[in-house]
Amino acid sequence: MGAKDNDGSSEFGNVSKEAEATLVDENQTKSTMSNRKVYKNLLLVTAAFLLNMGSYMTLEGLQSSLNADAGTTSVAAVYTAFVLTSFFLPSLAMEFLKSRKAMVFGTIPYALYSVANCFPQPYTLIPAGILLGAGASVVWSANRVYISDISATYARRNNRDEGKTTSHFYGIFWAIFSTALIIGNVISSGVLQAFAVQPDAAVGTAVSNATAAYEAEYTTAAMQIDPYRLNEIKGCALHNCDVTPDNSTSASNDAKTELNPAVLYILFGSFAAIQFGSAMLLLFFADEAPDRPPVRTEAKKMIWKSSDQEKVVENESGDAADATVTQRVTKQMLATAKFLVQNHSAKALIPITIHVGVLQGYAFGQFTKYWVTCVIGIEFVGYVASMFGIGSTLGGYGSGYLAQHAGRFVIMVVAWFVEMALMVFLLIWEPEVGEKALFFITFAVFGILHATYKTILTTATTLFFSSTKEAASASLSIWDPLGSAIAYAISTTACNRIYTICMMVLVTIGTLLYLLIERNYKRSEKAKGDAIDT
Image 1 (cartoon, rainbow, N blue to C red):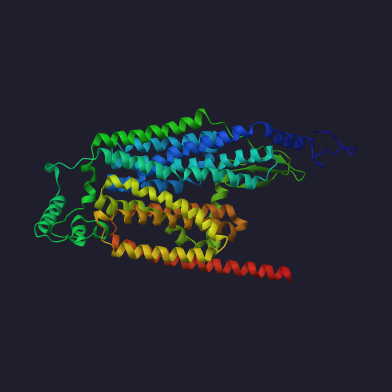
Image 2 (cartoon, helix red, strand yellow; image 1 turned 60 degrees about the vertical axis):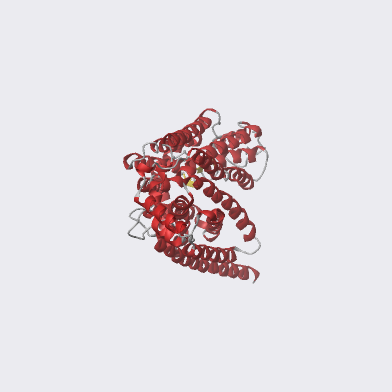
């Protein structure tokens, strides 16, 4: 290495000594992290995310049942802060901390949010939610960079294709991470069910009294209880806005009276300890990802790796002209804004992308509170919500496989039919305690639909906008969490019947626009193929 030919050029070609030294340094990164350490760090990061996000997602699913207005508002604050800080905070954090320590920095607010739930007031939950959203933007961006860097190191060390190696490493991460929602929710429901207590008669509400009176009346008369009337009295399912003489408030709002407060403190404290432990796992046991040094070429260009994209900057003097963080963030924001303003196809995908976030918020905000908690009890929320994780796994793998055979167009049409059937079912279903299986199946369908939309949209975005992938990806990361923020913001005031109908309208508009863009894309690809043939 470094031997020169007779013409004075090195084995790297006709480049300067400085460029050769840089390239040599880059090749030397092959030895900075062994294959064993690469996999160790991948599994450590995956385990940390499994522990942290498993705790948070379980807590998010309980917010609408446990903390009513303050809880759902705090979750809306999480997603809003995530969107707003994604433009600048990840770049700043990784500029000064690098990816590993940035993940540690971003994980701490998750633990603070769990602690805030021990004192569930708007002035504790909402600020904690804002901090969590900011931390989430950092932790997910740093995660992408970290896994990308260690996979690149592994690929260079073993002379493998970097793209395929990165996909393989992400596959390992998501396969393990997808169990987070299942494990966390099952544990929380087990704890709540084991320690749940019946509300004391002295603190019984008008709703519970009216319910008991209604049940007693029909039991005495040896008649079957009408689930419609019972749900109307309790304000369950689609009846959250129904006003009757016997019902001035929803029984689901009093879910906390059925739980020992000490149990909640133990549960939230355990979540906080697990999340803090996951941060320490990254801080003390994970290694820093090898740097990707700048590479100078004969044309005097500098290439560096940012959080989401590879940028090339002309450097006429040959010196490393480092762009400031502000300049990079500004450039990224302007590129995304320009992409959204000038690209009509991108604007056409906004409704379906927002719908993906709204769908998740509807499932974890409305369904867990007004269907699960109100009818069968808060101790079943975790068990039912775990089906979202199972459905997501099936939907993600299933849609990816079917897309290769049936195509994205067909999958989106089928997904639309399935969601319309689900919404119609929710409009006519009067849930009863004895129908627990339907709660589980319904939530699994939510998970399948959510993962299907995410998979198709992520794949389609990289294809539809191949020349502007970074801006398209940034756009996708804006509208999805924005949809969740909207869903949680209106969850306590929206009437479920109207909400469900609006969901049907939104998914219909979004699907039609997506299919239009898909058709135009296929036509353009066919035209390109015909042009090549001729």
